[in-house]
Length: 434
Image 1: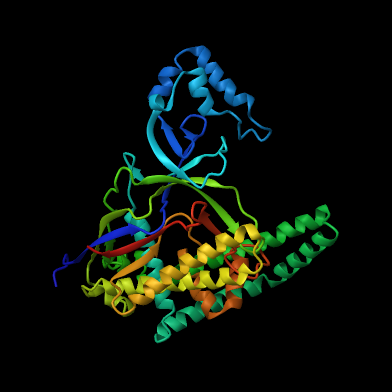
Image 2: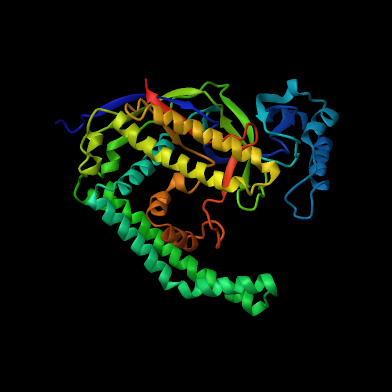
């Protein structure tokens, strides 16, 4: 076999829900955009700079922002939508560089920012690294969940033993922390007790960091050790799979969604966020190139030229997550606040639809569903569900050690991020052969 021989898979990717893969960029409401009705106008900075050439207008602009700043010194009541026409004589047709639909807004908060997505000259795409990371997690989950593999069982048992050992080493601090929290609820804590709380948490977090490092090393047993492979001049198994960025989506594929995080235990909701997203039902193409030299016994199915074998693994992981989310939300529905019941019911309906789709293609796996980008839970971004399914007690010990969720949370994860328009979850895509 030639060293450079590879299987090339031309694939189509379609957004099932809005997808948002950020790049740490944010747009400010004080100079970058204006919301009017159901539209967001991105301000042409050259037009704004030209209109602000007069020093008096610059002073008014700066003063307008400064005067409205609240005590936290981080927010302002300054309204760019009013300043542009009233002080600069600019209408949307004059200053709008780009205009997008915005969904899920009941009222417009003049202080909200917009989180931007990865793009090339303003046109969105999906990075191959994001797709590959999600696929890697699915593969690792499938391997750890393989009850027919003695090796997989042993690795998962070792992982759980490591969690139990780490937790036992800080058990006294966990117990003391719980005691102090009970006292705080009943009588409050003095200065010395508050310090003791922080000391307990520091001990637990320190052990959690060590455990997190150990957990990351378990994937080496499947995918290989990069240092060892470099030393032996061989390829680390997962480097044999190369995933391209998608082609650019249509320039008009972008829209803005208000998202909110719901706590399914307390029925509370977090601060709304505005995010750029790729619209639902948008399509693009990308490639998965595989050099068929996987050495690990479990991964050798990837040496074949049948991409549906990988689809099957991805679908199994997605189905398990959908099923867990469906049952968890269903269990909490009876305790949901009236205003949240509609959210939960629509989430369950969505989970059920995707699971039904996957049930129908179980034999041929002609496509796969995968979740990528913003809004994912810990389970869709880690091997946590494999640990949970094997040993719930150990999983909740892991939660305490890694400071996941509330310290006394009976379920996990306790929050779900949804688009307020239609109560959709971000990030679901469908991948199929071209």
